[in-house]
Length: 168
Image (cartoon, rainbow, N blue to C red; front, side, top):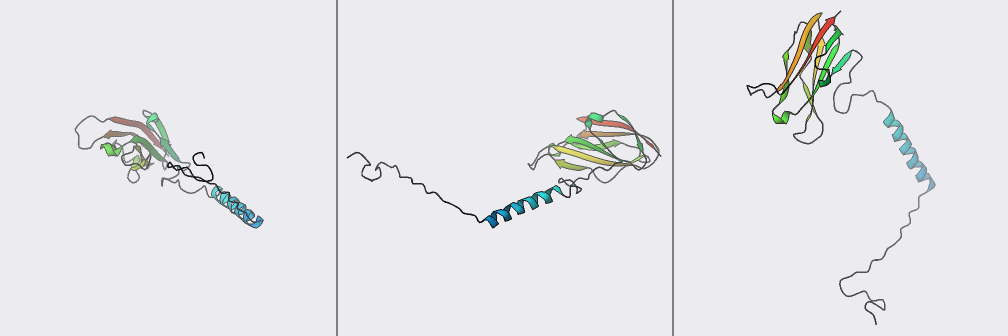
């Protein structure tokens, strides 16, 4: 008799695998309830997009001007009352950070502290620094930021500068 014949499983470490088919029956009312719930949740997720961004930042309003590193060297005219956000890439885990180096506070004032938003949830990940300024008076100012380690007496690793003219 051949090995494993006669209904006996093979004896050299193999195992017999059987499959069972499971039939699941749903009532028509259950299916309709599930579909209705999915449609409701989909509809709710499309509502309410006026909320603040998920990263906790603020949504720029119509009188907010957002500047990035690509705008360095720009001459910009704003209206008193406008908000200027400067968004620059960086990584504070390396010891580097952006600092305001030059500003005429009779024309432009920083609103709060700079905020850092990481690109990921990983420790040490790079991200963006956001500085928010408000035009508070008429005039012209150079806005200069430097990217450096505060304890080092060395040239900054990067700089950002724009000239802002505020008008009434």
